[in-house]
Amino acid sequence: MLFLVFELGGQRFALDTSTVVEVLPLVEWKKLPGTPASVLGAFSYHGTLVPVVDPGALAFGSATSARADTRLAVVDYPVAEGDSRLLAILLESATALRRLDDAAFTASPIASDAAYAGPVATTATGMIQRIHLTELVPPDLWERVSAEQDRAR
Image (cartoon, rainbow, N blue to C red; front, side, top):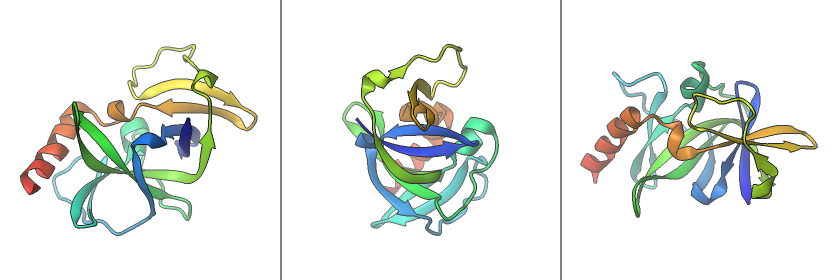
């Protein structure tokens, strides 16, 4: 499987590229008042307004840094069987793709309350934890984001 490797809180994570539409350099987005700190705003992606979410704020309560290697991953976020919405995720150090066998990932030896935190692979360059995209954005937050996209359709 092909994964986009990135960092959150100084730790390496992997996102299955099958849901990734495009990886973009940082673009300007419109901040939206009254949204949670984890929702940075929205930007126009080929004419579609796409919300930008900060997984650092969701996972660790600290903002993702805007560095030279920070990217926006536009993903197809499944919302219902056969239906999806575009979502942009701000990712630090998201400049590498890595092929890893699904069997390389094993369950964490420590149970986590974070539903998005998947199994862990040990590689020659360190450990990488797989992210479950559909668990990264809490349902209540996704409902707010999705409702706005539905109204815009």
